[in-house]
Image (cartoon, rainbow, N blue to C red; front, side, top):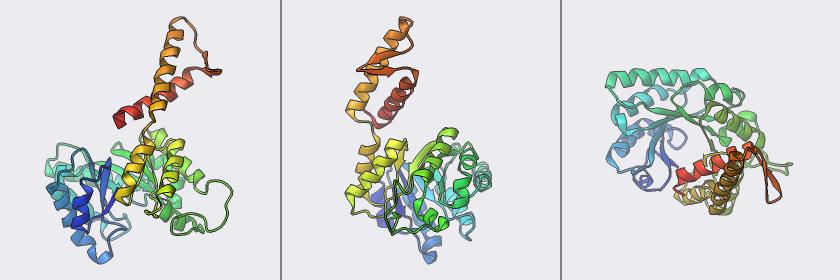
Length: 292
């Protein structure tokens, strides 16, 4: 979930939001005049609140801005091991990730930190989308890449509305190709893929629909920009009880047949083979993460 780092009240509220990860945003959610002061607010929030199991993150400003360098230094120096992840916006190439990785390594050594700070990156520029696979493999700190539809709309010069939907009729899913590029890059690198935010936070059905589409493709989660979106995402991205039960049943039947020397079987009029075991494993892994 995204939270403006400039708001002490919102930072405090975010700590109990129930989101898997909360990032305190120094970038788009902060006006230029508030960015420097927001660093201190973010540090106090990270170190002063009980975050429970929520992953604590900060989105820094872009590498091409005058704030990024000091964002990283002040957040890491102030929060130290109270910050788990830094989110890098507008990654265009692997070199962008490498730069942040090197700076973090220097800071960790200087401060004597015992736990490495992880990275997530946003794919939200045309160049970054073209280099998504390279970016996803750029650092072993990377835990996720995120599809950013907003800035990508501008970078591609797409004609979209404030919710990043096409302003006129369009055949099929407007963002399908970009989503799959980000997803494939993440899977190739063995990291998570996170779907874009949904700005129309009062449109509950729209958020659920967008989250469902991303979940069906294989995304691991979706950004929330309002606390009301968090429970919807938690529900949508967790396997249903039926999916979990079917996965267990398929594995049991297949293993029993495998023990008899049979590599593929019929179940309810459909073939079940090794590929289905990989799908079942995906379901059961996600269920374990969700506590199902």
